[in-house]
Image 1 (cartoon, rainbow, N blue to C red):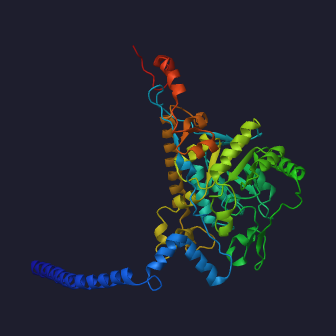
Image 2: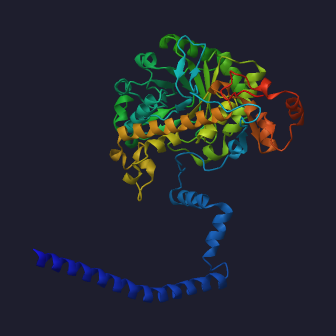
Length: 490
């Protein structure tokens, strides 16, 4: 036994020494080869004229962007309109140019449990109460994502006391019952998902007029992309799924008012709302919807994502989320609208974004792409490196059978918990105890144009008037025993 052990040890040592010697030889020879290739390549780059130089591609890509070059190549390859998933890559940094004012000298940061609960449609007979102000936006099974992905979103939302939107897809009540969850039924321009039992089981109904990434365009889905959703849509084997541009029989505000009343009665009094893609006529749309007596309005800004939409719709249509929210809030304030909830979505990705949107006037935020990526956490390796992560969750994906909905639900719940806890920390840092206490007065802008649009203070201007006013008041009058950070002063 000892002889064999010595033999194996010696063999292992010999193998390691051999590998080390080979690596050393290759390294010495390889460095010479690498130097020769590098010298030759660098010489070509710095001496060849642009018409022969590979650097021309880098220069051109910096001017137009790699994304544009690749998408134009896709157009040239097929001659068809391309469909880009997950929204526009164009940045919209307005939310990043806004900050919060912390509580320090004249008021203290708060301690204790922060109330993050909100109510959607407070005047409805059965308002929708949420434990956190974050909803999962409309991503439809059969239209955009798989049934497994929708189940993961439902499970994660349920675990955190919030809801998931059905999108323009179909929904199985057994999935909802199994998760013990709730959902917002999106009343789309399709013929499916209109069953009375679905309306009665919903926690809210959202009439879908448009969304940020695809405006109000209709959708035509070929049969090969429908898979098992075809039977729920009551379609034949070769029949396309079609979502039109208009609701049949709805020609104006009067017809829309009747639709709202019909859904309110059928649902038993849950909040009835509407979803729009905001344009420069946003005030006109808000006026019409309020005239129809809706309980909430969802505004899906231009940065929103989708399972696939034309780049022109994603890049060149609609108001960015920040502008849409600012204008909607000004309209609500000017017309003293207090009991209609405002849900904002489109490009919001961090707890800071969520809290800023609520401070600017939103009742709650809805997220899509961040929720999908969170649900896919820990499973990306099932698609990478040869396929993008979306192949796990989109209906047309090549790796959908590898997605685990239970693991996805757990990851999404953890993501929502982390976001909610971070928002609560931000509220404590402002010296407040509830999400409903946060307002635009807690914000400042780093850019004067952003400040003007949002109606908040510009950080570059001193506030001498308030400084003088605060100097005349003793801290004992600012801090009180009711304040969480109060302490006695001599």
